Length: 238
Ligand code: M1P
Image (tube, rainbow, N blue to C red; front, side, top):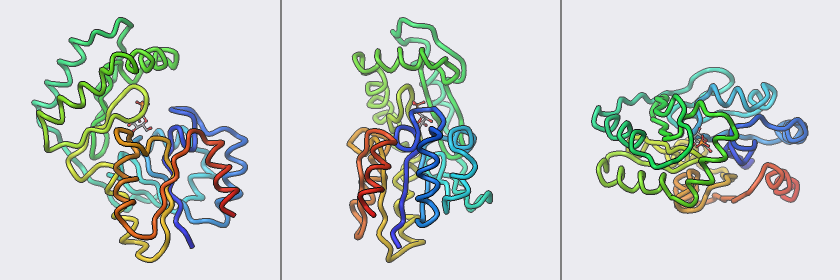
């Protein structure tokens, strides 16, 4: 039996929004006959906000915070803590102070999650319209890419993944999303592992997981652009 692994934002749900009822109905039916996992950079609180309890109950496991926490059927299977050095925080503060983004900034710009830090110059507590505004500005200014490149130089001990639309995920080396590939392979040495993500290309926050899987045998990576595409692929795979 194949093991299906799904990114959450942009793959099972629109970015930072709940799974649509229509998607949930089809996906829940599909889950009854397939083994699946969630693999997300978000923390578990956001998984609970975005996925219906039926869908969460239907997966074998949820890797959250870039795979630094694994839950299965409500229990924590493992969790990897990490405390970043003060110099990193100072640097993040300085990016927030010196941004040339012309719009308003919001609180919660350094979010410490288990095993990782999520950094957003804009601030995570922004309204959805402001998220879209910053994201469009960032596409032209490349602010996040520039910050990430500088951080990679200054702190080679960390992995920096420019993930969703407004932020980047910072983890110790080896503790990014790629770790999920190896953990799954240990649990399932012989099964085919199929991963669906919306950012599996270089620079995307699914890339590390897609890349590590591509180095293993009997794996498949499916790049999708929406939850609708996921359903289409699942249907065609029957
Ligand atoms: O797509 C996953 C990403 O979703 C959020 O990113 P953003 O808020 O920038 O759209 C974050 O939870 C991030 O950690 C995660 O990787």
